[in-house]
Length: 234
Image (cartoon, rainbow, N blue to C red; front, side):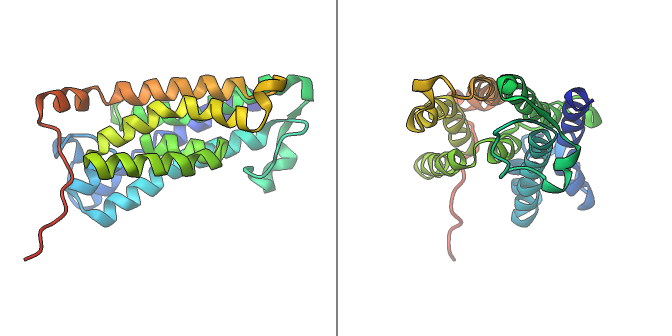
């Protein structure tokens, strides 16, 4: 039962439009303000810093929790149980070690469904955000060490360009190579035990993230993309 119910739950949890809800509480329709996006960046610009940070946290959380649910309820013998919801372990489906690839595939499918739920939420006409925060949440559950490196890459790109979109696309593009590097670093490429479904997943979400930024790419080419500037002191 977990094989189909976990991805469905992941999509539904990911589809909760926190940005829209937060802005509505302030009497603002975020879809008609700023870039029109319901993600944390537009909420920060339009509604305010604390609301944008709250939205960022919640959007990331709806990536973390569904993926941890998948890691808990669909797992394999020998799996690291660190990033699992331990109270639910007794209710999970534990596959034999030789079915590791199948369990890993379903785990990343849960993460992908959470991202798709955010990007194409049925509650807002199958539209949504760009999925960066939710993707980060999924990666925190699947490969937490890599997230630290990705955050450093994002910050470096943001500080040098002052564009959130460039930082986000750059971090997304470097995700698949970073995944391969991690497998090589831990010796899993050499012995063939590397997580192939995870690598395929990182390629998909990298492409998806860049595709969702196509309007930003156009604005960058036209020189009209919003750039964050430090507030001047008076």
